[in-house]
Amino acid sequence: MFFAGRFSYSLSRPLIMGILNVTPDSFSDGGRFFSPQQAIEQGLRLVEEGADILDIGGESTRPGAARVSEKEELERVLPVLEGLSKAGVALSIDTQKPAVMRAALAAGADMVNDVNALQQAGALAAVAGSKAAVCLMHKQGDPQNMQQLPLYHDVVAEVHDFLQARIQAALAAGIKRERIVIDPGFGFGKNLEHNVSLLRQLQAFQDLGVPVLAGLSRKSMLGKIANVDVQDRVHASVAAALLAALRGAKILRVHDVKATRDALTIVNAIEGWHE
Ligand code: HH2
Image 1 (cartoon, rainbow, N blue to C red):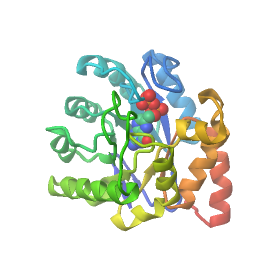
Image 2: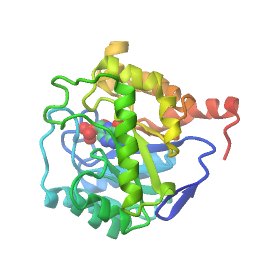
Image 3: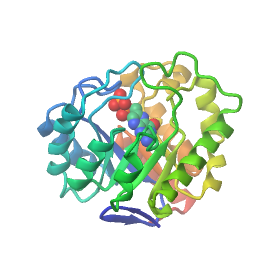
């Protein structure tokens, strides 16, 4: 079982996490859902399309993105969290800031999605004091510099060992294993070859004993392989999500919920993955 705030899941089939960026500058949908009202409407649309979880983010992590102040991030995400509190799905807050985590959890968030794997001072305690789930993600460097020269000796082993250490840190802080999810962090300080190795060997993370989340949606690795612009990566994204699911990913973080849901329904039927 996987527990996230008000919700619990058997994970007998992969869950779909719909992306809700309340930012003016996200790499694929920047500015489209920037007002709280627009974001809430988009969130409800994603639930109708089949999202199991909504991932609400007020700070872009795309390569080169500017940092956002705590106050500004909270002004972006809190009205959206409140507006979607009765949407019937788990609400995840995509943030690296402990103060934003605490405020979001107090406002009812069910999950914290931290691309910094709770490494900032106070982040572990912010989550440990709640019933929320947490996604621990690997990255090398920061959005400001991470694509300059990503370097690994063995990318799969290094990401695996980092995530293992962060699981241990989370457990030591009092976060229950049933509330922890890990993510290799596609595109976060990784070149095409690194990203391909991670997806090809995604099964290598199964031995960590917690669900794996995969965020491949519309990312540049897909653009590079298929030679398609960011607004034209739906089909490539769906293919990547299914490949991740077939390699054991239990949460798929996607922009295109309906397309992913339809495609996943076929995989679920053939693989015998049911509710
Ligand atoms: N990718 C992005 C943001 N947050 N969180 C997790 N756990 N895994 C990911 O792969 C991941 C993430 C980047 O994508 P997006 O939200 O579309 O863009 P932006 O960061 O520009 O808002």
